Image (cartoon, rainbow, N blue to C red):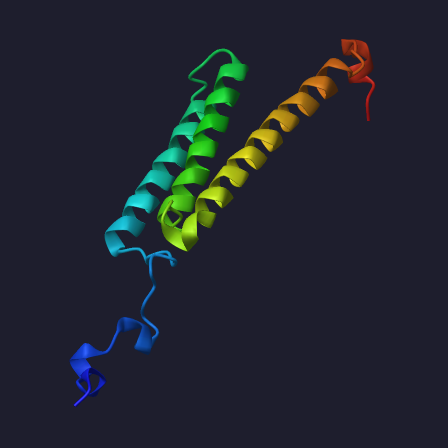
Length: 133
């Protein structure tokens, strides 16, 4: 009798369940709840900073909000998209690095554009502002 005749000797690959570390694991209820709680906290803190006018300098508030936004993106990628260094043969880590680069480009580009829009606006006198429609 061959070893394949015994059902207990079937390899996991025969049933299509041999992931070999190439597939991201599904999250547990606890991991989803951890991600949810972190997301709520990372949303509530910037809301409080802006609405409570915690810092007198709006630049400090904007910097903290952007940092917390970037952290929230990483939390979503880890807890909801299940990205880690082992899944998909390391391609998920490459996707994470690519995402971080894109976020840095988007955030710095947005700040640069907003700064130059602000500095290149024509100054308006109060009289001109009163006569605006």
